[in-house]
Image (cartoon, rainbow, N blue to C red; front, top):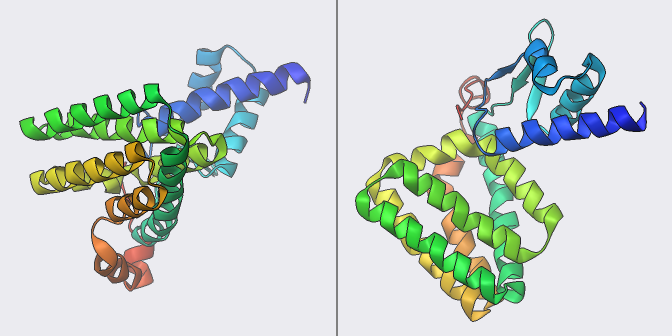
Length: 228
């Protein structure tokens, strides 16, 4: 592939990836090749290369006679991914406690305030947005682009089932309290407390829920797909 086509495929990949990570393209969405060709004004080669890259990242599935479809996950896959996500998020919080700047401390407080406002209003949609913004500040503050990218990719694939938590007002209030604990530890620069608080936050539902799903028969846990 020429350098020009390689650059085009990277641009296309990045654009589609961002839309998946943001939730604009939910799981199950079919990515029509003709629409992508018209949108980006390119030939098939860079589009197909971009889709192959997205498949390698686990963000799309290339299905014969159907094309590219934004990936979804089974309940068993969700549990496995959440066990990994807990550790990645904890590491991000630990690094953020060590590296956060004064400006990022302000941004973290502002993101928390937005979470609190949404929680007080019982607005689950706004809380989801504020929750994403809160975590985004931590990813930026950890100053590790590879770690941040891995977390964002995993959260995008898990979005549907994770967002279901916020259908319950009690979970929103509990999440807010957990955010406050995470923020306090990061602002104080206490790495151990920040990591521990993040583990408690991400592991919501506890091991009982995870173990219950993990023990499901394959036709239930492996065959049911989560929606985004």
